[in-house]
Length: 216
Length: 241
Image (cartoon, rainbow over all chains, first blue to last red; front, side, top):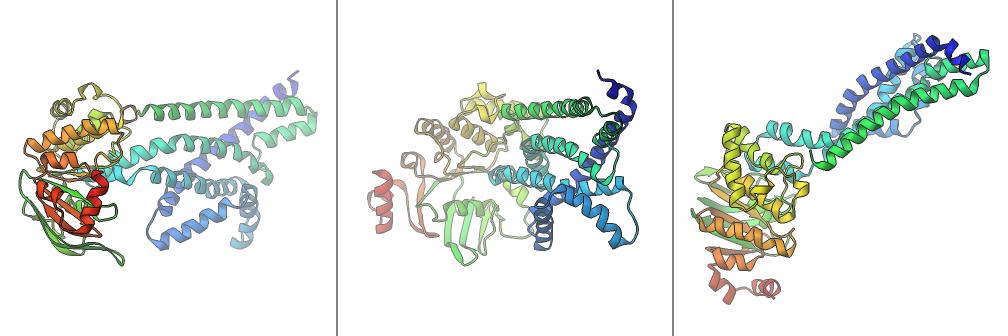
């Protein structure tokens, strides 16, 4: 009944591994860049604020698939040499996801009341202590559930890399399907793999939300 | 203890404070009242250097607040401040809120800071709430924790910025009681409030501000009975009903 999946299991799981690697690099680059973007969006320096805001608005208003295409097909024309699909996809994801992480970080920062910071100062805490013990812990707690949700979205988004021929999970399922014509079980299997991994992530996210409500 | 000399402050073109002069002696309680937007809170925030001012000078215990070489962080350890909206740290228990600054700034041991915090929670009447998070405390309890948090630094001066304005009526009394006891124990206090009962009981001086200036000042009795300016009379009529 699951013959197509069973017979091609190593091939399919190899695709899952590509998906995991894509997500890992997308997050490993997207979150740090997102932190910089978030800081840029709260900067009072207009030479920082306006370029970063332009970047965020530009990227957030075009579809991810277009960023992937653009990077893969247009960049080689500009730089004059072809790009490998994997690094090209990773860079596209980093550029795209960083804008979303940046906005989460900006919102988390802005959710900390100015009064709580001033309360810190008024008890004699200095800038570093106030940032370390008040600003960052409060902001982090508020942004963690959204960060995890966005990480799950990033993980799901990685399947779009298939448009530039990366042999990730969905791409490999189509390859097998083209040979064996077992669409229901193959795409069912892909759905189960994504569901299980994402559901674990959303459970983690919910745990943090509950913690936040308790105040701890 | 506090000398305010010819303070003026602008937000852009807007003149928030105009030539304010005021002196607060050690152990005195000064009540500041006036309509919203009159500069009361701004004045408090200038005294502990949360906001800069453009003209004049403020001395706290002999230290100039406006001087660039003054270490404001150190100065603020001597001036407690209580806010209208409590501003407790939501990720910490009442006890942690109180002990944070003594441990980090005064370098007290955890044990010592905790003992002092429990003593203060006792003093404000909620020792049983030591391990509660702010979200699980009523407004009145939160404000009392905030007062204890300020007192934990053993400041020479306590400032209150409309400490009861965000509270339900039945909680105002419990906060005022703490403040009255504090005043009677000899703390130097500047209190922005419209609670005239509090002013009557403990104020050594009441100043009335409007549009950035002090337009009336007096010890309590004279202030209530015959305010000099019509503006003060009008305001007092509104808040005293």
